[in-house]
Length: 292
Ligand SMILES: Nc1nc2c(ncn2[C@@H]2O[C@H](COP(=O)(O)OP(=O)(O)OP(=O)(O)O)[C@@H](O)[C@H]2O)c(=O)[nH]1
Ligand SMILES: [Mg+2]
Ligand SMILES: [Zn+2]
Image (cartoon, rainbow, N blue to C red):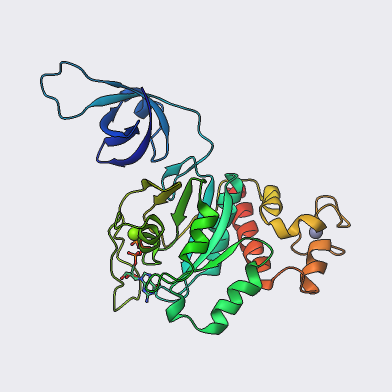
């Protein structure tokens, strides 16, 4: 039979097929090959029949080719990556957002940015999000309390398998529930002391409802540089595209070179400073990684 993994918990995979969910084990061969089945994986599985101790329904025999996959958050077949950043509590990190955007670009996912908790936001901060990302990625502003902005987001995500990803406490589960119109995923609190989330969501889970395919995922607070060559990074910043190939040196790194078209565009305000800073930081980290 063919199905989709909705979630994996403690060695069990919950596979949906024709409206039913089957608890499955994975064949040992996956572990041997270093492959972990992920939420979102399309799989071939077989039902166990005539078992003496029947604590599971079936066995996953094969994982069908993936569109893409992520370690963090652990999900496969992501058509749209929706990065959720709270405007406050926890305070947003543009560096983290950009690192994560690069990894989504690398995976070939469509990207949208969802700024949550607009009720707590300083107007200047919302303006900053607009200034940096308008024209690069679709931006949505949502409030989990009033539901403001949810309809627009739902329209944009309909029909596209979407992962909600971002820091713990940013409001991913709250948004997932509002999008799906039901309390499908447990939400947590913000620690009064650290103003961070408490890692309420512990595993990725795929939910279906009304033409939506939404992964709720565990929050993360740090993010390693995605695996790529430093030279590839320039292509992960969509706003660089008009300037690439126009620098004096064909192997320009866009960090220090004279007559660099990207740096010139940045100096004229065509590329945002904060994005340029992220580019430099990620570039330096990738370079360092290669040298070791
Ligand atoms: N003020 C305000 N609080 C919100 C909003 N959205 C969510 N919250 C609160 O923020 C807290 C964390 O929300 P969650 O939805 O659990 O956050 P999460 O991103 O799923 O967190 P993890 O599962 O830990 O990764 C909860 O107490 C929510 O009620 C919002 O728009 N405004
Ligand atoms: Mg959550
Ligand atoms: Zn350059």
